[in-house]
Length: 82
Image 1 (spheres, rainbow, N blue to C red):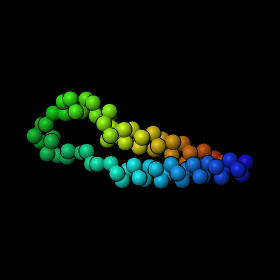
Image 2 (cartoon, helix red, strand yellow; image 1 turned 90 degrees about the vertical axis):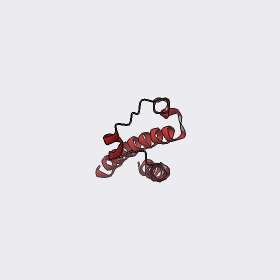
Image 3 (cartoon, helix red, strand yellow; image 1 turned 60 degrees about the vertical axis):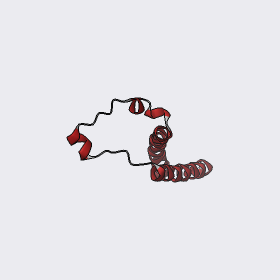
C-alpha cells in the first residue's frame, strides 16, 4: 500500500506542475465590461471554431488536469485517513 501511495503522490505532483504551467501560459480571454456595454457579438467563425485552436486545446487540458487533480486529492485524502 505504501508503494501505491508513493506512486500517487508522484503523479499528483506532476499533474500539479503541469496544471500550474498550463495556467500560466494561457492568455486572458475575458473582454471585460466594455464588450458588455458595446454589445460586441461573439457569434463569428473564430468563436465557433475556438476549440480547435492552440488556446482551445490548452483550456481543455487545463480543465481535464484540474478534474484529475481534484480526484487525486480526494483519493489521497482517503488513503491517508485509513
